[in-house]
Amino acid sequence: MTVLDRIEELQGEALAAIDQAADTAALEELRVRFLGRKAELPNLLRGVAELPPQERGAVGKAANVARKTVEERLQAATERLAQAELDARLAADRVDVTLPGRPVEPTGTLHLLTAVRREIEDVFLGLGFTVMEGPEVDTVHYNFDALNHDPAHPARARTDTFYVRDDVVLRTHTSPMQVRAMEAQPPPIAIIVPGRVYRRDSDATHTPQFHQVEGLWVDEGITLADLKGVLLAFCRAIFGTEREVRLRGHFFPFTEPSVEVDVSCFNCARDGSPCRVCKGTGWLEILGAGMVDPNVLAGVPGGAYDPEQVQGFAFGMGIERIAMLKHGIPDLRLYYDNDLRFLRQFG
Ligand code: PHE
Image (tube, rainbow, N blue to C red):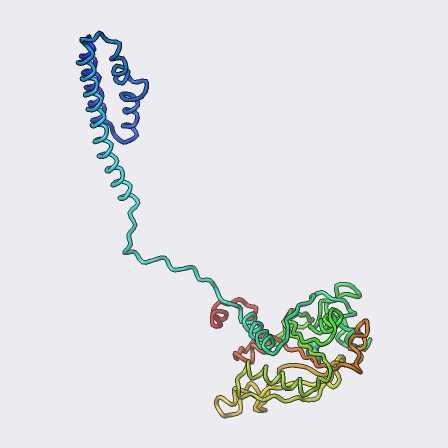
């Protein structure tokens, strides 16, 4: 067979194979097979120089034309098959933009107790208090002794309080942080302390764990009038600008004098008739408070809180109770049942 015949044969073979290729990957293989570095046709072209001079022109030209023909056919086939492959992929990946979108996953809402705690914190931050937290497991010393509790005080009983050890309890109130905070910094001090507290109580109006916010402000010349002013501002921020507060005498071991604080009933004000919430009295009890007992101040190590120099007030409120009054929640257990129909109302 002459070289020219071989060229023609190779070209025919290549074109036939290209026309039958099923996809672009097959075409790539054919490109290597017929036009690659080790393929016969390019080798013939490279060998033209070694041919007898009278053959060079014809062989060179034929090989060149053959290579170009094969290249052009490859190019055309590649374009055709690539387009077909793209069309097939687009058809398979088709997105129906007319379908209704998938709704965004609901992100949930703050629990009512969290929302109310934050609201309370915001009010006191605005009045210049800072927020502190303290341990939920605390010593008998901080929970009772340093707060001037008599050794026979009923709250010390194991029927009332969860004991971890003889000298360690689950704190029964946030008041131990009064002492811890004063130990940590000299006066003046103005803090609130939100947190969990624990008591051995369980019925419609008591759960063994609940939440309090403690308040403490100690400086030179603080009086009961400051307590009343701060709590009035607090009540008006939380319960409405029309509110009044009143103080009633009470007893706590760690305040002297001690008071219970009432806010004027906002349900009565709403419909003008005596309501069930305040039982027609016009007042709702919201917290316990008083002037920090001199014994508590004097007990702070180092003498930084000399009761002859500084005075202060403290208060403690239940977050559950504040939220109940504010939102008309009838039963404490609703906070903890995790019924979404309840929780979602306070997003
Ligand atoms: N710790 C008291 C309680 O839990 C509340 C209180 C706090 C009273 C601060 C006076 C001063 O009942």
